[in-house]
Amino acid sequence: MELKWIGAVLVMAGCGAFGFSLAAAHRREEGLLRQLLKVISFMECELQYRLTPLPQLCRNAAKLAGGPLRALLQGLARELEFQAAPDAPSCMAAALAQVPELPKSSRAVCRQLGQTLGQFDLPGQLKGLEGAEEACRRALDVLEKGRDARLRSYQTLALCAGAALTILFL
Amino acid sequence: MMCAWSELLSILPQWLRREVDALGKDSLREIRLRMNSPPELVLGGKSHWLKRRVSREDISFCVNGASRYSPWSAATAAKGYITAPGGHRIGLCGEVVCQGGAVTGLREIHSLCIRVARDHPGVAKRVEPAGSILILGAPGWGKTTLLRDLIRRCAESRPVAVIDERGELFPEGFDRGIRTDILTGCPKPQGIDMALRTMAPGWIAVDEITAREDCVALVQAVGCGVDLLATAHASGLADLRSRPVYRPLWENKVFDTVLILRKDQSFYGERVGEWN
Image (cartoon, each protein chain N blue to C red):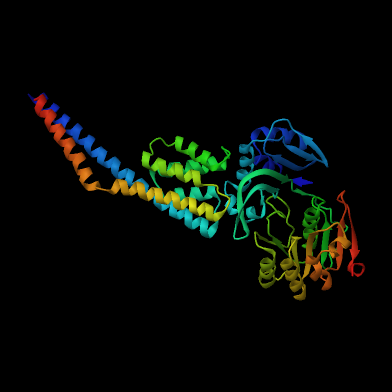
């Protein structure tokens, strides 16, 4: 009898944890996009007023970010410093390959950011960054839309599924 | 003779690096890369062609290596060149972007001319560091090399403010002399004004006077009691005098001595009395 109850608790806990982890991943993705937005606007300021070269710019920007985004920017700075590829988009692609844990939405924005880097004229470079910033904002909007309801439903559905399974098994 | 050789090699694609290193450490003057053509190495005045053709990626690698993937940060890219680490100048040729009649950048680069910067300490040892000195010569005849050594000689007696618009005169690793102050990346007229106001120089040195504004700024500086060291593109005095852009210089007797370079990079001096 005791084993049954232990099993029931484990099933409930497992399902609940799955729902809560989905919600946490969603929040993390949103947080990363917010960090990315901050990084892009930092890059715009640095370029506009200091013309900081790209490897140093990535190193400085990495200090503003955390987790996989920080790893990505540091990786990109390394790729650029070692001149591992002929152009900046290829360096970004190589850096992205080293950070598989970066979520899909942030990855797409980073890829777009990589495509814009290394322009010949400053206005063109700034325009490119504006484009990436816009894409980041759009991705963030999509995630934020109905976020609270969605997160609540992830958690509730998981708990309910756990409860249903427990009842069935009992 | 000194040359930032490893910096030069670092901006070349791997396959080209090996060949250049094997062929040209002592005599290499230029590397010319043209898309879909074999690279041309100018070794001591003679062309040497390599076999493999240059690709778009090779050109891109060189430009990005020289500018640290930031061609927009080199204000000179819109003027058609960038200065690589080590002071090597890279001339760019390709599809130009114009806005409002001004060149704002290059969309696609098809050719590069990489000029190897070398330092020859002692080339100016027979020049008397007195008064204002102008160095004349055609491209590649050694104007910048002579100016660099002259700056070091002059800096032994009085401070020299160097307005190094392109960052080519004293790249990292080159001896600067004991009283040399260098203002890098600044246009010459503004730089001359800044140096005059703030650095109390004995000499002001500028490389390659090409515009009337540069000449006007030099005339004003001489009026403030400093001596000048400068270079200009001309094969001789007659050539210089025939060009209206340099008129303020000889009308105002700005220079006391003119050093005229020959193709073999030797030179001779003329006093300004013979000039006027």
